[in-house]
Length: 108
Length: 365
Image (cartoon, rainbow over all chains, first blue to last red; front, side, top):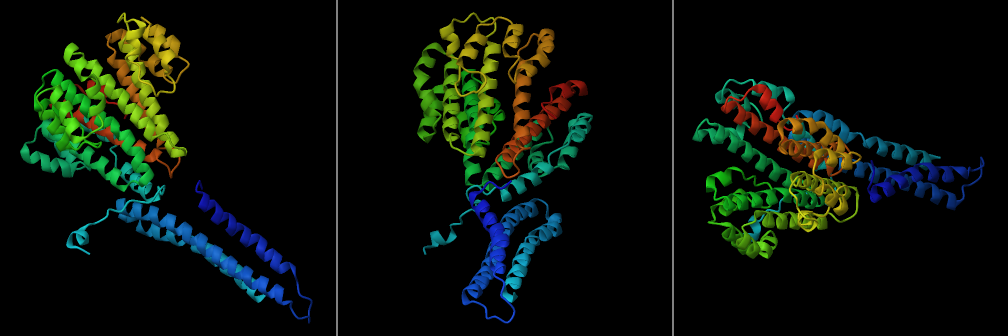
């Protein structure tokens, strides 16, 4: 259960960024052969940066929580180390998704 | 930086409301609590030597090894169990975050209250220092050394004076009724003053907002309710006037309010009490043991039933929010329950008590 206001804000912004910003940026499709408007280029690169940054912050937040709980688990049950490392690495997927979105925006 | 500053180590405490680390540790500790099958096996032991051998294989082994150097007796096992409980409670307090530490300290004040009341009762009945010290459980703010020092005092007045010298809050309510106690030798004056003080103090500390604060407050209220209900049962056939009965009411409960308390205190029969509270959460508990009361005629059956109810409430609180205070409350009460049960079995086996009788004596298993 996510109770913390900060957590809700971070996950909310990650969701918004992942869904809305690329949609806006990609909406302005450039006609073949025409030069891209500089404002559209700025928006694209800004969107790519925000996607990456928010995804990275969200993953960092998730990893901090998993890391704290993992440290507690390891203190009591060292045999669970492998599971903890796997769980600790899971939020990296969020960063990968952010990177993919940023890459798509950057090369669109 | 001075040499003194250089060696000062600040103990890590998880920040604010971060329950991730704390609760992961508590879950690990909870998984090592003894199972029902272990108690069955322990009760079947033929003598105390076998009991010691079995307990040495558990998490109590370390504490027991230290104690049995002084003799392989039931008393030493009992002390080892108390050592373990004290050590465990202090460990939990050390690894809790700031919010949980404050809440747990308020709830563990119950054991400080228990210790101070035990010493005062002991002094009132002129028990020996050893007898009093054996009943103490230093898991709150009072350490074992503090509690033993209190037990060493000559009389009740000296205990109150010592508490005042240490600047402990329990001195205040005791001082306010000490002169009356010295005149009347009525122990209930001191006990009531302590109860009222503690529950008022704890309620103030738990008066904040948030789900954890609410859970701790509700648990405290259940404690007050069970205590008031038990007082009503003890007052059966006492022929007290309304004024006298109202003296025994401790505010802070949610089910047994003042009006209900006064109504229950005026009853003269367990059936009447049951009819009055059957729609409350306590109705079922009273109903379940009513026949035992008729059989034995002792109010201790209700005491046990209400204690069971309190323990079950604590255990249930540990099954809610995985990142909340409930887990800590549940674990601490489970640990207390386990130690109490082990002490019952150790005593039982050492005096040759039948297994069935021991099984009946165990609290919630």
